Length: 255
Image (tube, rainbow, N blue to C red; front, top):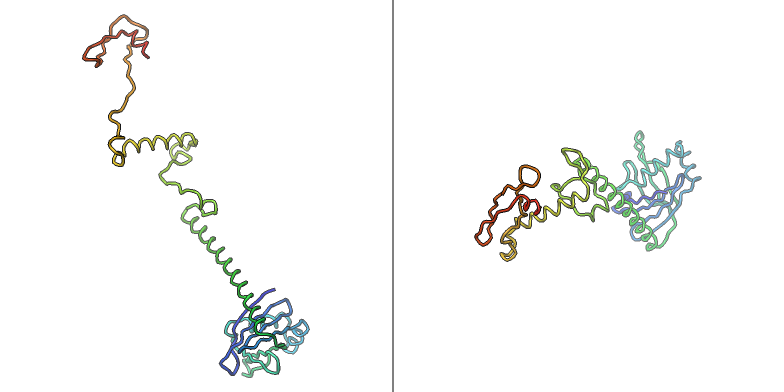
């Protein structure tokens, strides 16, 4: 079932009709508001067949033309609308004779304005929600298509809560060797980078936290030939201003 809501001009007057139509396959119901009054009506399948035969049209052709007349905002071209003899009537201008002939009518029953207005309001809210859902879906589709065109990752509900990855951060694969980088290697790289930043970013640290000297590992002097040797190798160390001599055996034992 399809529902339409439109405002139609009053023939011969300055007012308008607010018309709600619930369409079925070969029948429809209407709710009509005008100048503080309200009506409802029903066009049965038999009534539609009778009108289509008078106009020498098939039921499908008549229904299509009637939908055009009663669901066009502002009124369909060549149609006029009025209430006469308790009926809501729509007439169509014949292009050949330039005469307006009765194209359709529906018997009306008066109802309370409050109930009719409530039905129209519910229909408007439902149509608004449907349009809002369609608009949101189209917006998401456009965002995905735009990101795909720019080769950017699509936005999903999960990725919204994930931190944005810096383009300069290491990727899963090395660009030169195409070798996969493991999580442990990436973690080690991050630790090294943080340590390096801490060392060189002294401007943000107080002077008390800057190291006074950097400890380096001891370097051992090895003989060029393998195996212990009685030949003395002199190494100068700064210990209270004295010079000490070490044999190659002593040096090997220190390793």
